[in-house]
Image 1: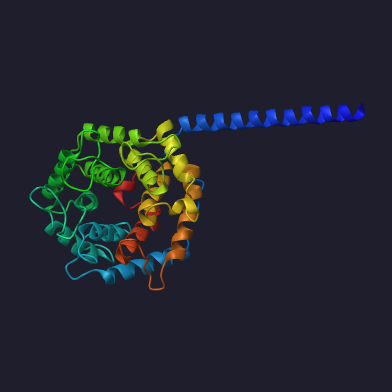
Image 2: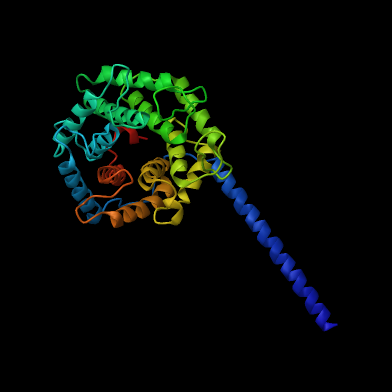
Length: 352
């Protein structure tokens, strides 16, 4: 009898614990769902010290390496306008403008090179830019950031043409792809164009609201139940790099609150730098957008992301001050420097 009572008690206790665990899990899930539904970007972060001497030194060494790496004509590496624009943005992120600042001459030379590759159609690309719409996006972003800060003469007309090409090549679903024609879009190219359009609008260039609304609709259709994003419509599966691009795309399109952006931020925050999930896709491309996304999200998201990101990037720096990227050292170094200088808040595109 005593044995039967003890067995019954164990069963009852185990059942109670299981029910309690389910209830706790339900409450936690409900709480998380509510918090993501009520998500709002731009919360104040508890992070006090975003920089330290190690980060400052890494930036200084990287900028010096990149300045020496620049070609006499102002380009970087093989002359890609995309990589040249990213290299120039690395200097601009440190407070340099054409002929202003320690690396102002580098910015000026890069600007002349990019302007020399602005075509009458509005396309910005060098002959060896195999995927010209990447070049279009990064180069238009660079021109918009410079024009917004300096209103340099000769920029406005070419910037307007570049923006017009972006508007005209957006497909009906709201996306863009590799070539300067209307074609099925992907999230990777589309975020490049959305950032360029956002920067141009901030600089005073007209961008139709409809263009941005279509981009929002496009990326929303790419979102998966886990909060991450697919590469193209009709495809499934999330990974870090394209999901980071998706979050940045939503922010730069003007989506700052609600469940869609909340779920997306939650997904990307789970791919913390230094973890295996953060290695999905292109490392620099993903963290370039992921760090911007967490910075714009602010609050606990940024406080958790930045220490891990800066630590991981510093561990990857080469002894000569460069970083090795998938598209070469100039590309990797430019991306790393832009990421590391995001907390300086000097790029107009990062204004919340």
